[in-house]
Amino acid sequence: MKLAIKVKPGSRQEKVEKTIDGYIAYVKEQPIENKANRALVKLLSEYFGVPKSRIEILTGKRSKQKIVEIKNLSCL
Image (cartoon, rainbow, N blue to C red; front, side, top):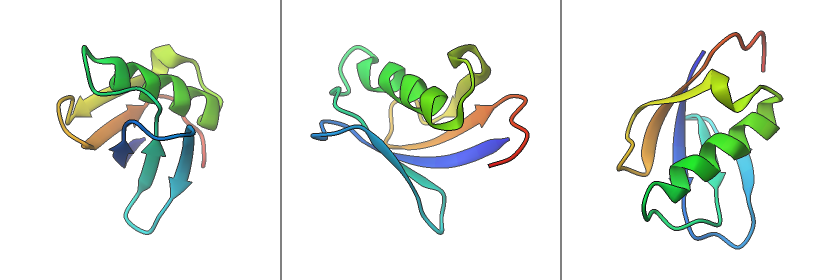
């Protein structure tokens, strides 16, 4: 399943919100040396209850707008 996610790095708390357009993910890490992307993958794995190895950032690795694929996700 592919999801549109907007990432907000440097947030006070980590959380995921569902919106009309997709999801907004708030991560504490700054976008330096890929830290925010790793935090995003960890946060999504906890939110959807899947292992981190099933989550892949397809587009937007250097952007706040990302397309993320979660493999073998049965339903939201």
